[in-house]
Image 1 (cartoon, rainbow, N blue to C red):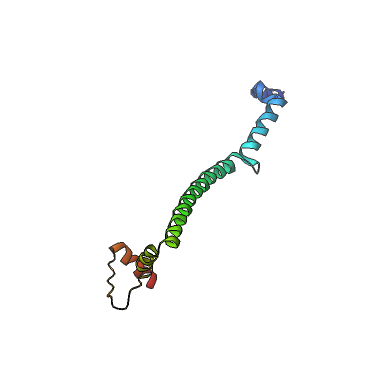
Image 2: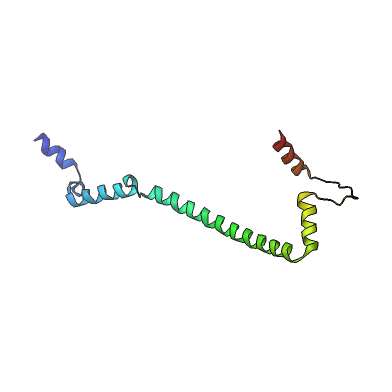
Length: 112
């Protein structure tokens, strides 16, 4: 009789074997499987980040190709690039480098 009282307290839906199977299956898919929803969400988030990175680098490649083309076709641009990027100068010139505070901090950090 005690067993019947406990069984009577359980709702009918929870006593159904098909319902229990579906509940266990849903819990398995949501939480326990290697391809669960949490892992799927992380993968989708990483995919969006990688797509953004791909777009950034594609734009960067295009600008670098354009700069490279300009450097290869015009000697004046090559000289300008060498002077600006590598601080090259002619023998009879004086070179003054003016840094922004941000650039100065970056150089100081690298040297320390």
